[in-house]
Length: 274
Image (cartoon, rainbow, N blue to C red; front, top):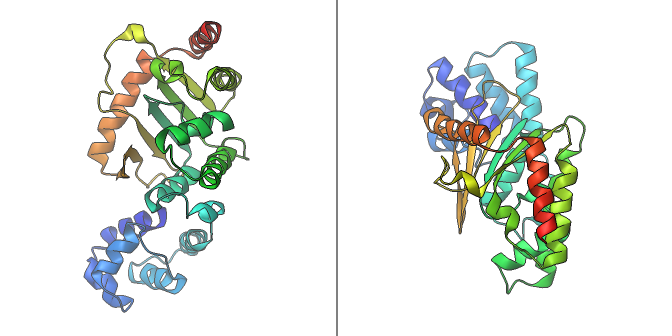
């Protein structure tokens, strides 16, 4: 998706139609559309041909995009879990790995990147109670694998705003709940993680549409992407005018939410109630 967005920007800047670009690489305009949406794999030859057609002659810029092509074609670590999660979620994991800033508003559960293994297992079983035990464990393993991006070298900044209901909702029994709250208390002080709470006392607020995630990428010319999940799929939004509305809501939530110190107090209070 990131590479496709780059190619779309370059094609638009060159004033070239999708049909013209497709003809140049012996393909169709619809294939160019699928490439730009990140829905098909990329041949390095096609990318270099398109770069020449778009007038990109700077060696540094060309090499950057060729390297991005190689990365796009590489088999990611999470590919081995393709049998237990849908394609639309694999797209999200890839974007999550590439993001520089991830902002999350969550209503019902602690976000996946902050979950303990036991809490993750309880959430997965809650959503699919008849799931095969082996599949449950593979889904849990994928979620735990995703969390490594927060402790890698040059991790993204992860900014979470959780409704207080997500923190008080018991999942998996008291011990699991306690362990999850204790983990969040430990994470409050991490330099790349910000945790805020929307307390009950605040009443209604800007995010009446439900949970969503905004991802920002290191490449400044790439648009932010909003991710919204529903029961059988997900929406990916990158139109600037729509992304701006979600960003404005996130900003209002961050102003209304707790400070990190107050977050620790709320979490400690919940722990005492348990």
